[in-house]
Image (cartoon, rainbow, N blue to C red; front, side, top):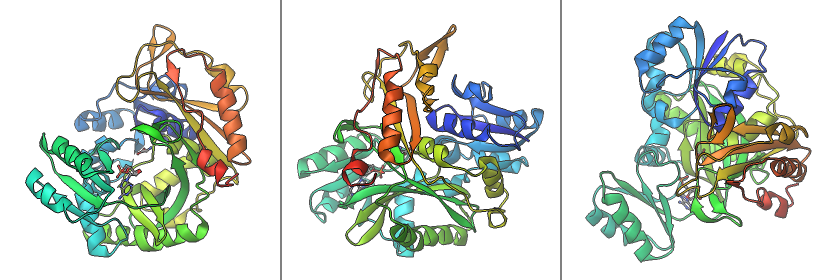
Length: 420
Ligand code: AMP
Ligand code: GLY
């Protein structure tokens, strides 16, 4: 069968790499793709915002399944448009993608369904926000409402910092969420669901800060590893029972069932798992580590999800291994990444078993160059986090990319916690 994959990042390269291993795949197309994805797919210059053009492409290329990688086209309703045109889609409707697109929506759903999450208020003006702030201690968390790629969140240690974050949000159009600070360790849990049936799809921990020791600016993620050992089977069961299952039930009850992969960002507090946020898609770079550990056929699972047949297929199987990915970013990321730098050594890096997933890359003639902030995700599996880390960093050492940098401490928390 022919599949169209929407997106161009490291997440989509990992999906393309795994889909290409499926016996059921005839042709994989990617829009727009990148040079790494082009090793597994035919890249097409399609605008995901032009739903009619994507639907036309599906008709012309006999596409049986569209896999939507990033959040923006989901929130924009691409899945709805394609389903209306008769194509199976892996990814939620716009209504269901609100779980990621609107923090206010998710917070209200949690309140109504009694789902453990930080106490919050939604505010629409700076005046209301400053009054509401009186009801919170410090630190306090300030979030812009809407898609913000993890950059719209401030954990404010002082009242002045909180006020500055609110003033910045209300300088433009938009609303904010003020919430209580949750103390604990974070872990990400992935769930495949067709709206009714849900199956766990692995766990991961990422490193959001740009600097070593988890310092500096927030980024989309500088590295990740899977599984998250802190999310023990008992805690995972608790999170599914108290957070995931009631969320999916509430979405069904609203007439907007969630279908696709639900990514729950959890805080493991002394009182049990609490929801920090939902994403309506795979994480990037969490997807890279999940795909390296997944033993099941990804295409079969995605098709069963899209066709609401998850109850009829075997549960996903992951290797009893650990995977770790190191993001190589362009100097200056996340503020002002330097683009255009030449990248070499990928074959050498992959010679020891690592896989170099490409994110912000492009071609300058025949030469591979950096085009975006996060450029590569150098990924490896091993018997444990330490072994995977050693292979990944050995591979990073073989990459020739003068303008790039990476964190040297990916996985430190798992290693210090004895998670190896
Ligand atoms: P979000 O975009 O909601 O995932 O927030 C980004 C990051 O901010 C999270 O990964 C956490 O590290 C932090 N964060 C968000 N909400 C809270 C909270 N209520 N308490 C503590 N940290 C938080
Ligand atoms: N790595 C975090 C995310 O994909 O949202």
